Amino acid sequence: MAEHAEKRQSDVDEDKRPARAQRQVNWGRVKDQVVGLIAGIVRWVGLIFALILVLHVIFVVGGANPDNGIVGFARDWSDGLALGFKDLFEPADEKLRVLVNYGIAAIFWLVVSSIVTRLVRRLGGAGVG
Image (cartoon, rainbow, N blue to C red; front, side, top):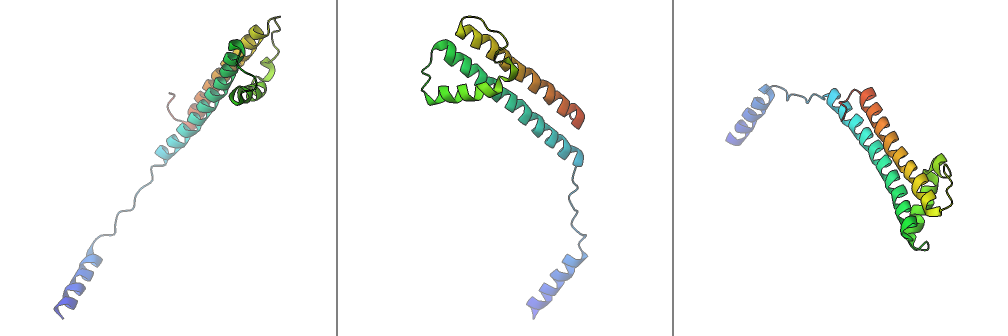
């Protein structure tokens, strides 16, 4: 019986305790994290696009084996990523053509992703960084 008395006393003690404080969500911090995540994704996408274009330039200028899977992957993706820059300049030398046109496209993706990243941060209210 003494056990029941102790249990009852502990039940009473628990009932007298103040309700556990609920965690407050800091929505400003959540918003800043989401904005930062979106800005980071935009930045990484631009970097990856530029990297693919630069790899294609390196493979063409370096004379890489066109039948290699990595070279083919870079070539296939870079054609789409070059947008209107693919045939912007048309020098006689094909290596120079690829270097200039795809190089400009890579710079384009870096600049655009940087601008969009800043816009996302400003519109989202997060610090620019």
